[in-house]
Length: 500
Image (cartoon, rainbow, N blue to C red; front, side, top):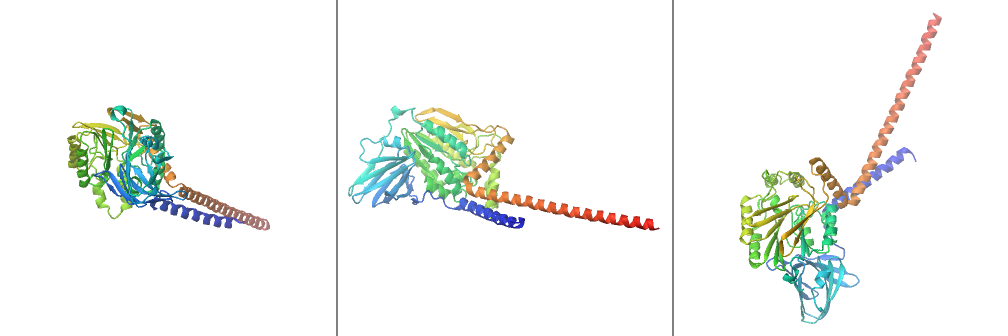
């Protein structure tokens, strides 16, 4: 085969690799995330006032407290079953059946062993499907009402024994988060709180990778939205996977409230008026319990010498260029001197006043990639943003917190290996983190694009070589012709001289 034919084949392969890689890259970043070909999601029907979700399945009315009806799983072997995702360690399920029948319910995002042992002499068959999913089979009679209510742990007996974990700002730090998961499973907490920024930019392929990691957690995984999670169609994907933007639950003598402050980075108002009304009502109903509030963006930035957040003004000026604005938002986010608290000082005062009024014990926050603690009017504010995202804040490190239920004075910070605490290694680590995440989120497209670029590089090298070789040959012929001409001319001159 001639060199020209080889080059033509290489060019065809080059275009195939680049076209396929770029197309798959775009598809991965925009195609809706599908949990499984066997799963069909259902529209979210959740009432935050009662922390309940309602729906129907197989002619039976279903109501869930401390969880939500997520969808239907079609098992080719055993048929359909209803999927419920827990928003608390011990969700309650109520079923009202019109006819005698068998139905199956999968409860995901729980510790199956912990949940199953809360039932004494249950007549329902419970099967542990995996680390955090329990299958329950019901044999129902016509008109029967069934209550699946686990026995609550005794506060006096369990005080100080049950733990929970707090972390935040995972983003594209998949390796760090996976290390945390391994350690957390060893701790065996009752639940894990993630303060938001689960993914980097709300893309389906990022949620896909993150969601697969969370299936390795053997405890209830309680999330709240961060500003990075809602980019693009991120809110829609989050809702399909993790449910309502705000909710609450009780565990023993404590009440945990999860808020949605995700708009607060690019908009003046962090928490909606509707949510504030719900929040105050929820705290009133939880009177007498220890209150814990979970949100992503802190009401104020505790760091000194921070500058005003100008993101909202920039977004208003860049309405015609969203993709470019996204890039600018990223660059602003890396500015360690910009305030990461609420943009409106009046909202900060309002929020902190509510926390003080209802004597909240602790407010768990993230958004700043570090660990801070401050007190305001008797309320403790804990910022933990070290679950995997890049570390550009001074003196920051990867970490998570472990708290004891019933023991408000016990808090343990677990630190993980982090880049050296100066700017050059940390920026280098951030770049490395970005490219590693890009590969994990788009493995096949990246391989195809790299293959195409490799072929392109080889073609350029070959072309330069051929051009150089041709140039050398031409130059050699030119020198040869000059030499021949010089010899010929010399002979002519020498002959003429002898004749004269």
